[in-house]
Length: 293
Image (tube, rainbow, N blue to C red; front, side, top):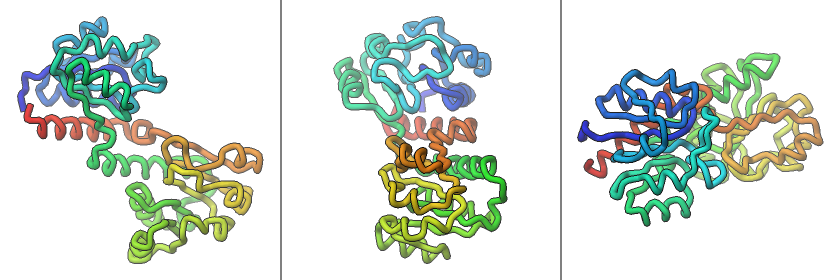
């Protein structure tokens, strides 16, 4: 890969700070903008730009965070008090530049293409999704430990959904001595649950068994923990929702019933920002290698 490439990192959280620093450590020229006081944590090899124009203009690769925006108008920049309009990114980017961001919407993608930029959503890359499941599972267990008066060992745990996160979380919980039940809709997934030695339940039948658990972890981004399920749970149950928006819990009903729910969004960046940053960096490099730059 061409080490003369200039990377522009705009906005994001601690994950992006680490990603920028690691990109610079790999020998690339790196600029950053939109990190506020946290920019002091950047490597000496990362150049802190004074304006969005100084950061983006002339950069072959422009990296936006996950999610790239929370309002569709400005870059997601939780570490900075300065708002960064998306239009400023698009208008300043050079024709032919590569724009990489997470959870991009169609309107932004089309605007980038009209500018003549190549744009890619790295959040949907399989390698990032798979590797992000590791800090997500560990972060979920950390939350469970901090919010229950008992150990994970011998706790009765329900993992709703047996996708990437559900698989790793089930294994991690068992390693700590938990009694684990996992749910799925597909017969093939139910077979894998059984093959791995876990108890199983069809996701649509959770209400039948919901009262038997100390901790429920949800990974399904659909309303699976509804009134029927929540009303069947124990009053002292802890529910940790790991699903992206809109989540899988009826939060209003949970509040009415007095059930404790933690909606744990963006866990990789909170539980293990250095690891999450490395995962992002590796994913970005994979994309650029495939593009032959």
